[in-house]
Length: 218
Image (tube, rainbow, N blue to C red; front, side):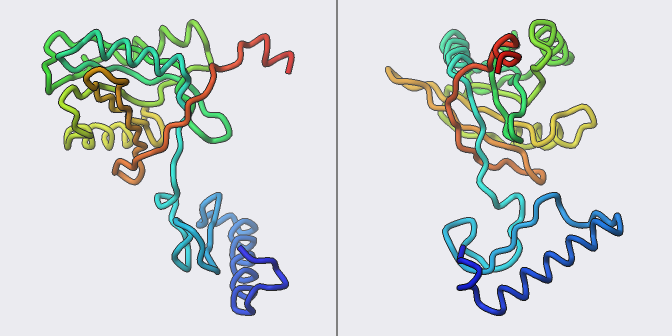
């Protein structure tokens, strides 16, 4: 956070030491360091308000949600009231950030105002069907509604942690909770599963993915 010629001697030495550690780690094929190492040597705004190594789980998280996907979630949520509903989040990664471009509703005939479960095998079928339409789409996580207005339940946390640990699950799966409101737009909260826990993420509304023809032209 400071120009090099204004940096304290201790910070300069620490930066040189860190650079040496990373180079040695790479040249010896140890790979003990993460792909990105963040070291705070001068205090700034959060999450850089503590000296030392910044953990990956301490960094703020943002997911992109297309306006079309947001509209789908709202439509599905309203149609299921007073019961919960949910399904799969589909999309891809752009510059390392998840982009939710489509959502699929997966019906649960036993859903109630406080419970919803995805039938076994339904998610895989939904993802396969979406890939036939657009091969870029992949499984990013889950969404469901909470008409009660509550946040993630302990069952939600456990389910997302299990999904993150599964061999065929997405890395850092996303959970989108939709809370209907009387007369107003639904409230949406996004979470990313990191280190076995849910971390709240900022939702950034965005446009749809470019059509394949537009990608080629660009």
